[in-house]
Length: 303
Image 1 (spheres, helix red, strand yellow):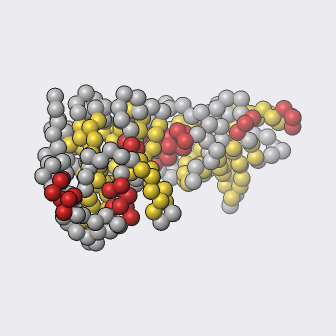
Image 2 (image 1 turned 90 degrees about the vertical axis):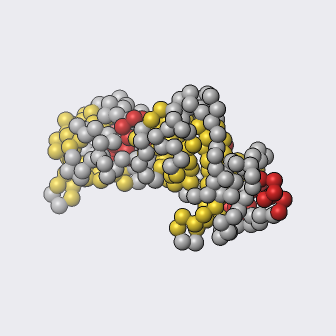
């Protein structure tokens, strides 16, 4: 089965006042998925692999705790951000596997606790302590390295069910398909999937974040998408870049496969073609040769 990009190569339009997006790259992918990645990549029983530092303290006669995950794995940080996005500030959470042994100081405790969630910020969990199994009277500071097992955080809330915090993503496995990052995309670019079998066909999304998790590349999208698995169905991915040139008739050679790195305003852009670099730097100037070569190539479109 073949898939055809039916867009015009003149690929620019103002989507907001003073901002022009130009079609800069295009490629075919075979293993794409649109997902709500809180509910589909994670679930309530996901296992944390990072051990937090723990600090107990009292504020206005209320017992509180901070769980410090700043040194945790990237996977755990992403999971925790998604997990707590679905909780209210009064939601109950449970810290389990809290057995702690610091032999050099003769310190033994079980920090398994019933907590009331307050805030998750900068990879710190803030909570009110309802009860703790057995905390030492000699210290309020506990170091992650001395936990016997890895503490786990659970709640009765199902991830991704809070409509106000759902986060949608386009996913491709890093094994068996191309890399999104080979398109030279960054947060703020616009992406579109062209596939007649897709319920998201030709919908344009702004890229909010790009990350790699386990065997997948994930593009976080700025608005809702319909969850679907396009594995085995070829999809064209079109990439649009904000341009400082306000012309709506820019024509870029999106067939160019020579990749470069360019430094623009102190920011290094990798895997970008010359045209991408020129667009990002505001130095792209369409020429008659550009237009005559590519204007009828039928591989771009205006957004």
